[in-house]
Each structure stands twice: as structure tokens, then as C-alpha cells.
Image (cartoon, rainbow, N blue to C red; front, side, top):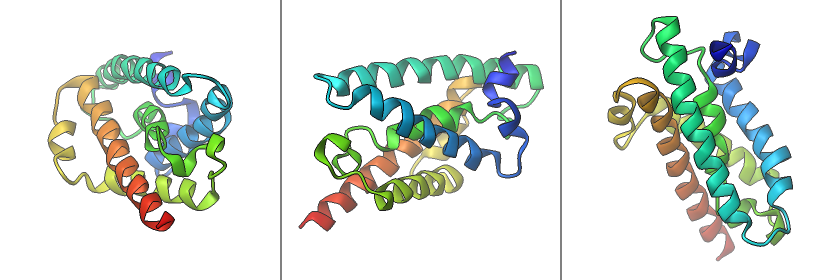
Length: 161
């Protein structure tokens, strides 16, 4: 059961599982997170708390799944990409439906930036991935998402000038 959750069922067995996990996370963000936080006071606080809880749960679940699969960071475990993907758009005015600025361009750019940072692991992400258990499995993706978020916000700022 834990492995099924950590692999998002059959998605973890597909070719390029990290991309599928990221796509599922993007869909989760678009359908659930945006809808739950749209036009709600203090929505960012609720979103942050919810994201933090998902990350903590993923650390536990991914760590146990890796142990059960007897692998350090199994490629089929994609819950880490799933929970990190919404962080790409957290607090980002470019993807804020309340601001009326949500656009397919920024969504696609955010997705691609996250995959770029997740795959190449620059700027210390590789060191974070080396941390033990579920912490290393999940936190490298969280940091990749935060880097993607910063670049996306910079792009939004530059394009608004």
C-alpha cells in the first residue's frame, strides 16, 4: 500500500516516471489547490500549511517505500515530484487566478523549469539528494521547485516591465 502511494500507482512504472509525477502534481495544483484557495482570505497561509503537511507525509512515505524496495532513491517513487510541483507556483503572481494572470505559458514554463532543476540538480540540489532516507528523496525536489519558483517570479517581473 505504501509503495502504491509513493509510486502514484501505475504512474511510477511508466517511462520517464519523474515527468509523470510532476504532471500529476501540476494537475493536482490546477484542479485542487487553485480551486480551494481561489477567492479565499488568507489562502496563501492555508496553501502553505497544506503543502508543508504533504511534504512531511511524502518524506515518511517515500522513505518507507525506498526501504521496502531496497533502493536508495527509486525512480518509480514519484510522490516527491507530485508534492513539490505545486511549490513552483506558490505565491507567484504569474500563476495567481485571483490576479487574473494565470496563463498556459507560465504554467508550462514553471513545469519545464522544475523538470530542468530536478533533472540537472544544480546549486546544491545534488548534495540535498544525498541526505538519508525520505528526507533526501523529497527535499531535493522541494528545493528544485523553489528554484523554479524564483526563476518563474523573475520572468514574471521582467515580462511585466
